[in-house]
Length: 545
RNA sequence: GCGCCCGUAGCUCAACCGGAUAGAGCAACUGCCUUCUAAGCAGUAGGUUACAGGUUCGAGUCCUGUCGGGCGUACCA
Image 1 (cartoon, rainbow, N blue to C red):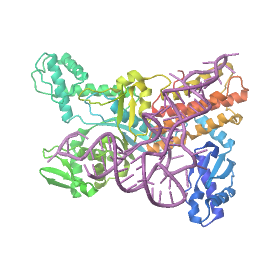
Image 2 (spheres, rainbow, N blue to C red):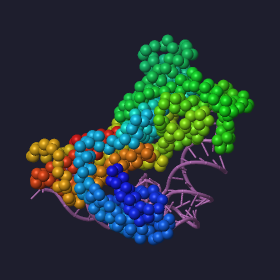
Image 3 (cartoon, rainbow, N blue to C red):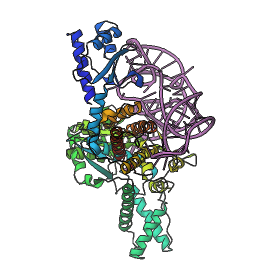
């Protein structure tokens, strides 16, 4: 932010005036919790206290007295508490920045943090064994939103879905479909142990019967059943993602890795002496990376464990020349991550380009009780069912509301409530309310898009709202750095609160034309900021509610 | 047993690299619609930040230990 850099520059100059030899500590600017304390603050004097062997308050005093303000951005400088220096911005600076935001419109909040970077985000990655459930929701929405935030910071982003359609799960799935198929032909068909019990299996079987009649009844060949199940389920998953506003760019089949990459990885690890054979299996010396036990890469049956393709997959990603590769992982996958990183490093790749967002599991609360889900037992709430009840906006919002690292409780009944309890409406309502005022204002007075004169704005509620609006780019930056979309929600809440307060205190219709113009201009920026924030979250910003 | 994550108001959760008086929503209570959307605003009440130590000018935040919850810890994916 321009102001931050400016302040740091002036503080630096002032410190050097007092003590030319001083090695400068890192100067940080932060926003005081209490607005009465000012718009920005620094703790340099406190940090310098032990270095200069002087009382922090005195150092702060000297720095404050020595401050220049060549551009006239700073309204006041105060020393407070144990040695904080508090700054208040001059309104002229606020108006200049506001004008800039006003002109950027739908691009306001775009920053260049990741400009020119190629980033891949891998998420959802559910194997095609059933519809997406509420349990997959957090992964899907989190991944898509992190991708959106990266895009907003200038990156070229690819969304990838990694899947496996070859394992035991898929075999059981095909057997389940076949059993239902035979059942529908009124033939004796034992249902496979641990088979998939969901109604969707019967639907797939019915479609097969309509297409092939009873021709498949005598064959032991599973291919048709497997293929039909996979196709149907993937189609369904894509429909669900589509409803949630999620568009994947690529689907990566784990099978690809068996046509070379896995052999290459084994060769590389072998050359580094990280591999040995024992009991007919092939082991990776993970003890060298600080683990208690070594890890099996290839079972004595000849099949690889899931770690081997994971390693090959990440090397494959890095070969695709991404600057950053992000995995969205549930807490259950976290154990494999260190092995993958170590192995990728050992193969001579830069594992620092791999980043992981780990989210804690979602506890579904239904009818006031925790709800245990299982895809096999068909005991689940699908994302589609949830969206039927609550809508896509609410669904996305609930998954994004909390920091990824905390356990999330998803109360289905609460999400369904369309009333005032639902926090997403607070944001959307603010936007709709602004749009409504604009419609009314345009009926009665001409607003010709000419530059509003923001210096008309002096009311406390106006100034507070302006300051909130100006925080937006910084929020995007922090969100992108931490990969924590809930920060945007927190911010939008504060922005909406500032707007509603403004709405309560200040009017537009009936005010003098210059003031009305300035206020409409402010509302314009506010609406754009709300809309841009909601867009990053993949949530709509309605004009009416 | 060991490893990772979490523990903040009655409930669900915030708190930017360690900053000043720990904040929202829901639930409870009190006010505010004859003028731009009351899905709103203003206010009251609610806390030993699980517990015990440590580090320092300063700790919800960092370190150690204890207790409680989640997830791993397979030649299952």
